[in-house]
Length: 66
Image 1 (cartoon, rainbow, N blue to C red):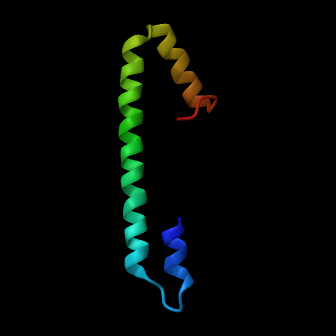
Image 2 (cartoon, rainbow, N blue to C red):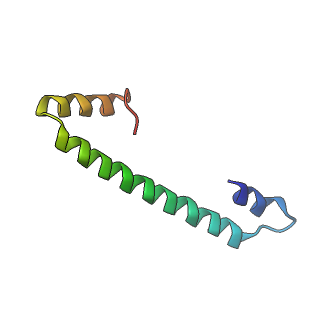
């Protein structure tokens, strides 16, 4: 966020800095997505069908946020 703020704080907009910050945020989001998918896969393997149904319900209703 700091780099995005820096991109707009000067007299002229620094598109390169903003793009760089955006690229880092997108990469971070990709890594987070991959970690969530891996974790859910591992959790799925340990749960019974009933537990999977309960987990899915918690995710769908927003009680559990991932």
